[in-house]
Amino acid sequence: MNRISLSRRGFIKNTGMITASGILLPNLLTGKALNSMNQSISISTDFVSGGGDVRVVSENPHRIRFKAHNEGGGGWSQVWWYFALEGVKSGEEIVLELDRGVPASAGISPQVFFSYDQKVWGLTDTGKSAIIDSREFFVYKHVVRGDKVWFAYDLPYTPAHLDLLLTSDVSKNPDAEIFEFCKTKKGRPVTAIRFDKPKQESKKKHGIWLQARTHAFESGSSWVLHELLRWLISEDPMAKNLLDCSTLVVVPIVDVDGVVEGRTGKNQQPHDHNRGWDILPDHWPETKASKSLLMEWKEQNMLDMFIDFHGPGNNSHPYFIIAETNSLPYDKQQKNRKKFFEVLKSKPLDDIARLSQSMTQIYHSERPWDQKPNTARKWVTMETTDHNVALTLEVNMNTPLSTMDGYRSEAITLGRAISNYFVQNHHQR
Image (cartoon, rainbow, N blue to C red; front, side):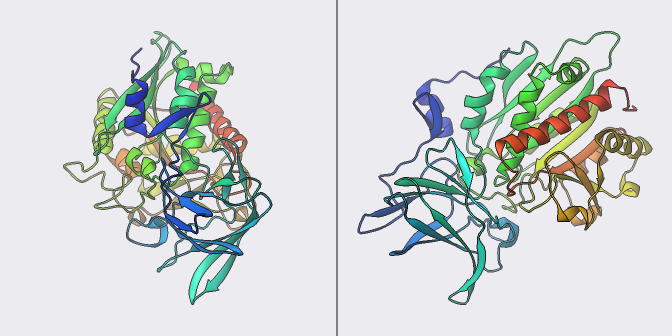
């Protein structure tokens, strides 16, 4: 077992986290406010994953105006925000005015997350669109129940959540290895988990690759992978059977720099972590490390499944984005994907399906290749094995169901389908 060993000082330096009451939490520096008026209200984003441009417009009534972090292109590159508000009184109403920018940001959350301790999170009431000073806004109102409150675009997931809530339990599994996958361009460690039980002569070893957060703002994708990892180390016989017949690599946070720095990550320059996989030399260390290991699996003919976890930020069922069937270059890829969807009981995502939402019915949506050039999924499909099932999963973030319990239900649904697919020998090589 290879474990990353860091002193407390070293851990703080690498991740920006501190311990409080035995819980690792983002380090909120309340003494460094980004905006204050008569020092009665202060705003801060100076903590891990904090982001956005925030200011106090008025204190009577309390109006906070903010913009999401923008990677430079507007739209879906302008999504993530996460800030702390201090100095209000319990029972007071806060009006949050999200400036959608120009062009208007696409990823609007009908409700946003709030917390008084960064451990327990709830959802605000549903906001409303508004025109203020001839600009598009989305306005939320929330009555606070404490003098300090955190607001976030979605349920935050940082390297501390992985380290505190998961790695100690995963390390107890004798077949699990927690390792430093690579370092980011800014020197932060990217953590991965490998499950590799010794092969039994009578069983195949299937290669399964799961990753999340090539777009930093899609925190729900990390939560689904987090809960899938918890299921893998559980006593569920289906989880044990899957580990018996597979080698699994899981990367819960790919763009660690973007997550820690509170950036949206999507469409960052020269391309984000889900683009440019066919460009050499690789711009991102994370992409280079992924492609290297995936090519090793190709040489062993054991890359069987690749799932890239994302989050659409809308009211929807979870669904896979997939290439049109006739775009898949190999017959085995087409047959294997079809069989996996049969095992999962996945259905096409149509207009009727979009009228409802769940966490346990996973749909799929075919897209032409040229809509998303050079993506991780496309590279895996075209450049690795002729039998792999390569998918992009859009977890349904920003819905009333998108809680830790909801993400757990989604993860277990997916995990059991993957287990059935491989354990029952549906996969053809």
